[in-house]
Amino acid sequence: MDHSQNRGQGKEKWGKNKEELLERGFELFQRGSYQAALLYFDDALELDPNNSQIWDLRGVTLSHLGLMDEAQESFEVALDIKPDNAQAWSNLGILYASQGRFEEAVNSFDHSLDLEKANDEVWNNKGSALFGLKKYKEACDSFTKATGINPHNAPAWAGKGSAHNFLEEYPEAIAALERFIYLASSTLSPQVEEAWALLLELKMKTAGQNKEDSLKREK
Image (cartoon, rainbow, N blue to C red; front, side, top):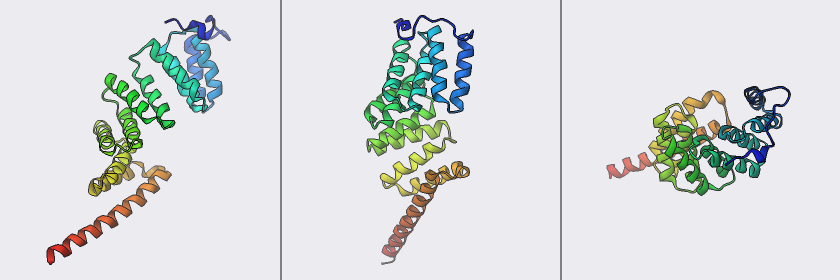
């Protein structure tokens, strides 16, 4: 489908070509100047209205601006143009998850993983969406996939620890949380502080259980 009608008739602005517009847009995006970046991406789309990657990037930018309906529309156009755009499926899933639409998020992540099975970030995000659905065993399996692909994926270790905790698999939870803290301790983020608190709670809990088990064996 030709999406030129959505973006105008495609002529160069400021004497720049598409690559220059994208390069400048990327620079602004990385600096957090999302509104300015969006203008460059829109102008790039005027020059190449059927470019799925630019529509996807536009959606990410709109998400950062809090314009979720417009972002969803951009991701859908990206996928209309190129249904095998794994990154667009992933970004659509992230958008759904941010809105608490976890079933739709899992479906989008599955589409992405059908195309790129070895993407640890998508496995991690799928795990988070499953966790939101309280499907802790499936969430744990997804986090485990992520850490198997990339052992340095700290958020996946944190998610794995939380899932094991809800499954009352405390030794596994402790091991995963310790790995997360090891990988992420330099950031001093609130998530690291929460992991330390949960880790202490779990160690006290398992110590109490071990003491009870020992007393029972002595009787």
